[in-house]
Amino acid sequence: MSELKISNRLSEKLLEARRIVFFTGAGISAESGIATFRGDGGIWNKFKPEELANFSAFMKNPDLVWEWYQYRRQIVYDTQPNAAHYAITEFEKFYTVTVVTQNVDNLHTRAGNTTVHELHGNIEKNYCISCKKRFDYQQFESGGGSPKCTCGGLIRPDIVWFGEYLPQEAFTAAEEAAKNCDILFSIGTSGVVYPAAGIPMLAHRMKRYTVEINVNSTEMSYIFDENYTGKAGQILPDILEFVKKNK
Ligand code: BV8
Ligand code: ZN
Image (cartoon, rainbow, N blue to C red; front, top):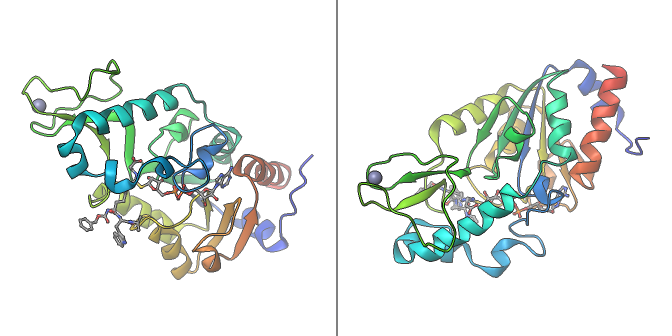
């Protein structure tokens, strides 16, 4: 039985909406067991982004950075999408759904979502920094340090590091979706990493209905029309239940 109290405003919006954007961050994968970046137990807490998630750190110590991603890849391989990911997939039965994610864990695609824009890349994809040859969904044995391409170049994760540009196509598609949606849900993100964090702001500026779902309030909570405090894995299935009953 759904215990979530959905406001009349959101109920109306859900009944009249056709296009929904789900903007997600690390918090949506927390209930799958993947550590967030900045919450307690967050992975950054052990490392500083400048230490590992940037190109110069990789060039200075490719083995360390590569092994850190191997460790995180293994966590992702051993992980399943959770109720929040699957609820978003089911929304596709009622709406045109666009997922815009900052996550690199591939869980939205594995949960069956058909339109997913990965703003920060995908930890299961890699490429050679010299010849750009791709090594996607290839498993590398761990402990061997950073692998080399046949051309001799270093292979790196296809992930957007700090100071690197976001994939233009994904970012433009994300902006278009945010500008043209009826509702944007921002789920499990602290909203501190730009330019991705500007996506909910864009929807807000374009007078789209915006809803935040987070266990805490965030630096950008003030911009949303509504804020639901709680776990994504509980709140999203509750909202889906309302849609199934009334849409
Ligand atoms: C760039 C891949 C252009 C790496 C990541 C203004 C404009 C442009 C750039 C900047 C700017 N200001 C500063 C910058 C620079 C920088 C930046 O934003 N720094 C921040 C830290 C201040 N941005 C960049 O460098 C970007 N590139 O700007 O290029 C350029 C080029 C050259 C020169 C200059 C500029 C690139 C940023 C991408 C970095 N890569 N990831 C990797 O994964 O190893 S970022 C990383 O943070 C992840 O992708 C992560 O998704 C992202 C955001 O974090 P969140 O997803 O929000 O996760 P977080 O842990 O913070 O929060 C989790 C939330 O969930 C919490 O609020 C928690 O309460 C909640 N939660 C927890 N459990 C649950 C839950 N909610 C619901 N249910 C639960 N169960
Ligand atoms: Zn190569």
